[in-house]
Image (cartoon, rainbow, N blue to C red; front, side, top):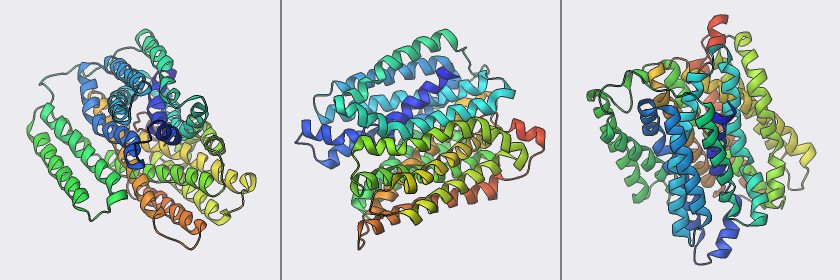
Length: 464
């Protein structure tokens, strides 16, 4: 369990750890503007999202442990290249290598968890796995702020010893698992179209923050994404081994969990960035202080995901109801923060209560969403299904960050008004995710089924 959790923690951590390194990177490469530096983050996010589903399908076929080791190796090599980067172009290219590794190791890690952990222990294992993903995303600013004090290259080099140890432990401790009924060769062209569809829509979300939704570049990216998605649908209906299995989407729980995950992670991504920007811009916290101020929320995630959420499933009558509760708690935490928001720093009495309440909501929602989506996945499709749900997570994060940047760009009479826009947007995403959970996932389950419901799971990733 600990070995498999390393993969999701590392991938989520590196999604946000570079944010606080931008000023130091910019000082070393003064020729690079903020737009160029933003691709250090965007390249990772887009490629990560694009690789997840094809990588999950590949892991089912070649072996999930083999895929996890390969993903860890590529991710670790990419981290080394990032730390050696002589310029921003090299750094963006190395981040792309990192993202490919992350996109392979996350669905392999989750599918191994579902295949290896006994059914009666999966709910807690899933809670721990998903909580560590959220913890990695939320601790990114904390660890990044501390490492930048040493040097921005250590933001990447910190992955090297962890990656090497994770590879050795995976080979020694994790049993192999694969789809034994392998027949036709996977649809490689369909996998390429799928990666392009996800990458193009993620790129459109990123570019929309700078260019606007009506710009030709953004509309062109969205159109190209739609065409690639249509090609995936056509090929999935005709190919004997499609990259996306149509039967998965006939499951109400799987489709609903995917939709709710997009909205939930949009809220999570918007909340995290909005809070960091407020603390550094209005309360004038240093990057390290801002990261430490956010830390108590993530510390609530693991106990609620591992201990509270599994006990609430039979009490409330289903994993979908616990997911809806988690979304509601997240929205309530943001409402509290909106009411208490002020220009004078008052961390203990204003931000801390909202952080603790929000962390509890994350611990309830994330493992429950994963459990609801993966409960009906057949063993042969664990990697594919995990990849799809993780892709929903990444697309949601990009959507939330892009929407927040647009919200913060709306002028206001004072800084508080601007950040209130961001909080209101976060609340709207949480509420929308909760509505989907109630409408699609909240059917009451018999007690026995309720206990089994959270068995499987997939995000992912995050935290984020």
